[in-house]
Image (cartoon, rainbow, N blue to C red; front, side):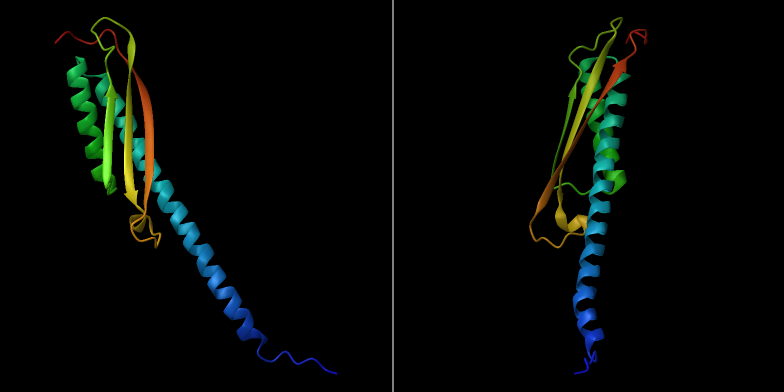
Length: 138
């Protein structure tokens, strides 16, 4: 008996093509998720740095929040919900301390190239920046 391999190429293609496409989509989704995480990390870093050079806790909170939202918009991240928290309660002129900024963004999975209707992913980041105790008095 002789085996005939006619039609085996179409069977291989029927199995391999969807698998290769699925792996490709996973790679794209992972890259998009990583890009969104990096954008949120950058926003938290910029917020903490902006807050650390402010001259009071209220000004630090305002500066950090404004810079974080601006950075997220510039990076092209669409957040369904976002929050920016700046802990500048220890900021005082003449005192060495730190400022902590936290940024949270709920990104729609459709924006991350994932075909999940209505799904979201919560991405968050925090950064601490030292405050210069010798900055000028307001």
